[in-house]
Amino acid sequence: GAVVSQHPSWVICKSGTSVKIECRSLDFQATTMFWYRQFPKQSLMLMATSNEGSKATYEQGVEKDKFLINHASLTLSTLTVTSAHPEDSSFYICSARDADRVGEQYFGPGTRLTVT
Amino acid sequence: GENVEQHPSTLSVQEGDSAVIKCTYSDSASNYFPWYKQELGKRPQLIIDIRSNVGEKKDQRIAVTLNKTAKHFSLHITETQPEDSAVYFCAASSQAGTALIFGKGTTLSVSS
Image (tube, rainbow over all chains, first blue to last red):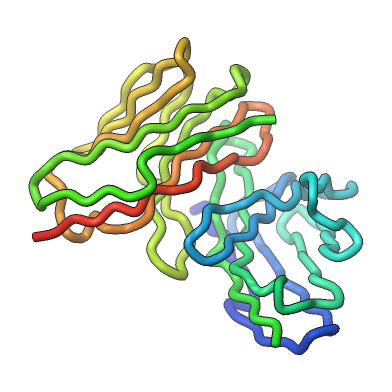
């Protein structure tokens, strides 16, 4: 149980284009999902908290107009990187919180984004 | 907000030795402290966690200790094996469902 999937696992796009990443909780309902970004040899940095049916909460320094988050259902959150630039190239990982288990979160497999 | 410091950034041990990684946190409201192992290009894997109502937890070769007063927690790996080589992250969050805040990671290398 407690499986989180992400799609795509990797994507290459050209500068100026937009890319959508999906995060799904497969066997539980996730009222809250989190998006992290991880640059090579660095830690996971929280980008935003995604709550079902409401606007996402972004961390300081993360542009909400550039990283669009939509949490339209209890099992799906999407992150859209708009007008991507090479510096947006990173490993994007989502996690979902199991409401029945205090604190514990489950991570998706990550999406490797390369912007050329 | 929460801030998690992790030390050391790199750790090299001989197979069979013990490894200890330490973290401190700043938010006294935090009460969930997981440890993750991450291999290159993969998702973090939970290896052990501890909640603030206990001071120590052990699972075979892995143990975690928590000192709430000092706001620090540590990961102990005994009888290390080459397959333990990876990057380890500590994290902290509160029961309110806030996100996990991660330490900067420790690259553990176990040589045989």
